[in-house]
Length: 360
Ligand code: NAD
Image (cartoon, rainbow, N blue to C red):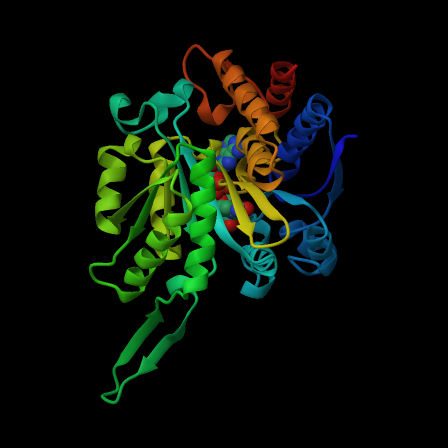
């Protein structure tokens, strides 16, 4: 019998509905090929939810997400909602979704696709073959630690305070995700910290080292964050999987993404301890091209592949989608954002059709 999955689709705003439509078509074909049944349920988030219900994350949407096997999100936001108060902004819907689902692990791959290598600002020989995954802790560290605030000292001067804190269990759970991820990839994990200066990093390094005893098939190394930033630009090929805290991961995952030169092609996954993960492109809702059939659907499609690999444990189906993406690029099909001389320009829908053909 076909394996059944309940997938909540959150098209959101801007180009969201256009790119998620392509993802649905692709998943339907994948379902037929791999005997998987996807039961799609669509819900509102972001600006479109504000327009319909007055809230960026309606309770009904959250309920549907919680009762699904995975959530496939497109993007939220747009000019129309930019002036609303913070609690009513589209981004608040996304942040509430992440915290309500307890998504503590953010996985962002940075893979150089051979067909798009010239889009990188680094030399071909430096970036050729780069294929890494940054696993970032998402719900702890300095962005959430207490105390925080701007206080007035005894001398009347203002003092800004944030606290970088991790408990052992917070480190262990992100460490496990990272070791498991490395195991599914090149079996090399680099943990990034600042343990020469920060106690919180010393604890981080101790726990990651301790955990490695359960993952003897994964080669573990440690780097200080300043050195890691340097190595990412000097010799990015040395990395397979990187695990790091919230702040360091925020910075390093953007730097790693830029190595590829085509940030609009990048997917991401956010995973929790229990319950569904959220899979979404790194890019935003691109309001400047919304409704014009110009959007590149490939980051959304690669997010669906991450959903299959990391959310539903269907690696063969994920491989098939990733191969189809490479195939359409080999066939020289390009959307406007990745267009170059001698290639064939396609709109969002036509790119979707090319993908379906490549899957057959
Ligand atoms: P953006 O990523 O939406 O767009 C930046 C540029 O890249 C634009 O020129 C856009 O046309 C282009 N682009 C992005 N995705 C593309 C695609 N798939 N195909 C072709 N071109 C693409 O970033 P922005 O302009 O800074 O933000 C626009 C809105 O998106 C804002 O409201 C912002 O808050 C929101 N946003 C949402 C998310 C999210 O949903 N996770 C992430 C970032 C920004």
